[in-house]
Image (cartoon, rainbow, N blue to C red; front, side, top):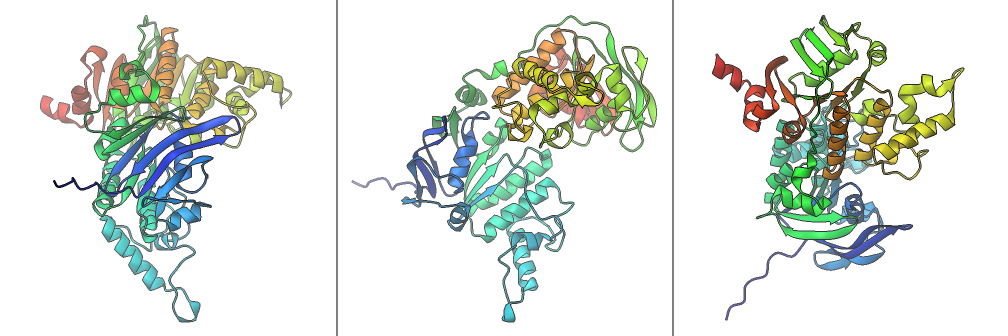
Length: 507
């Protein structure tokens, strides 16, 4: 009787691995197998152990117990160089290229091919780089400087670098967090090319739709423990969320009913030439209004003009009936406006400063006397908001950069909510944070609205828009294309307006 042939052996595997840092057990008896030609998703909230697992595979951490297996045999990595030599490459959310070097020079930094007398063979460097780009199906000039490359192109360069090392395992840690839809599609096309060549991919993303789009298997962690591992086929997004956070997908959008009050924010015919034009809308107290649309439609630019970061060429902004001068964030803050920006690391926080100092930045006038900040007041203010926002941290004096993405977002929210605003503008409030923290941010926004705050929420996450907004304003190519009440807002109606199909159908 013929025996069924065994499936392919895993290229890389963890077997019963545990890792602790002091009293914190980051991984507890976790097993995971990566197979050639397969994309494997790693799912879990911030703090679930994903980063520790990645660093263990990459040779940064050595397990306290358990073992790593390479091609079925045990192996010990004494550092990242060992893992790289074994064919394991990590692509991070924020690539780290040398900006003043060319693409080719970045790929072969420190290991350039040599000619006689030890001189670098620049022609071989360029030709090999060009071959790597052709293999990936991407048109990037090897001589182009890295400075000015988009995040998407920088990640392609990192993948090409991994291929130059003949990497067989590609670990991708939140690679799409800063990408547009078209950039994500191109990245996935490149990854599928690698899968077809037999590479194994470990993919980490908070966007569940991407996991289902790209991956064949999924491993779920919670509090450092293995919850499940197996094929994605037959699973739903609700199944994944339940495994990650222990609750249903529907609980991600805890929308409260709120009584609507007077108009808090009024925007009339706001225009910035070449960016957006003739934008008019209102947001009332107790209301969450979503500003939706495709990337490039002008949503964030409208928010920055409303807050005064960018000067509008025409139009008027009023807060509680008071007209604001154009181009003055200070006047906007004094009137009761608060803006949580899209890029929390670049525009929302000072990463080297402490948590408490970041929370206090918007209230230095209240926390100081004669130009000196009273540390006790600053600490008390931060501690109060840490409790209210359920912030997870070690010490408030720690740099904000050590926090997870979700907790950094809470610090940005605390920084602005501490000003007691009348209107809160939040740009992509849950980008790059896990589903559990998303639910907490949504709960907070809903509670604030119920308490009378006016909220203008800019989001590319359509389920978030539909789950949280009382009204949806949809932008298309710099103009407001539609205003849709909650009862009529569906994926179809929003996307029809965002792509211009609704206007064309009405014409």
